[in-house]
Length: 163
Image 1 (cartoon, rainbow, N blue to C red):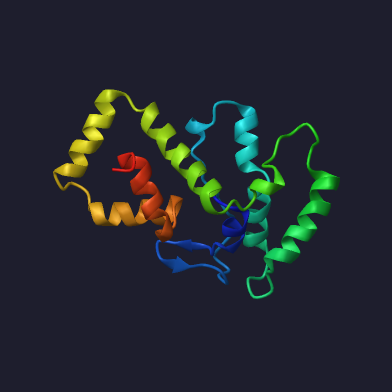
Image 2: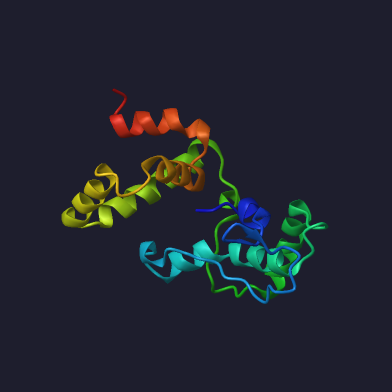
């Protein structure tokens, strides 16, 4: 799951063009792989409070944004406006670090793989092995999206079983 801090720090970049100060930017879209949410509770937990961070990123001046101030105001906002019956990420998981973050990312990736049929998994591996995709670019994208560079020893140990 994308940390709240990372969600708040993302710039409005589309196709490599930074729209941060552009009058052409009229709205914002956040993406989520909903097929990996088993129920509405899981969906809400992934959305909130990240969607609040995305909204502030879109509508605030990037030169004056401050994550710590946002988090302080977020507590007040949620107490007044977030429906009590809606689930959200527990605060201690807003910005997971270390092994907890790595385990969460690994579980997410394992869930994606487990959801694939054997045929889809075989086709995906075949596409990767015949060079139809830039594997180096794919690995870099996956590791920077879900993991951090210092996660690689941890990942290799988990993937190889410590061998």
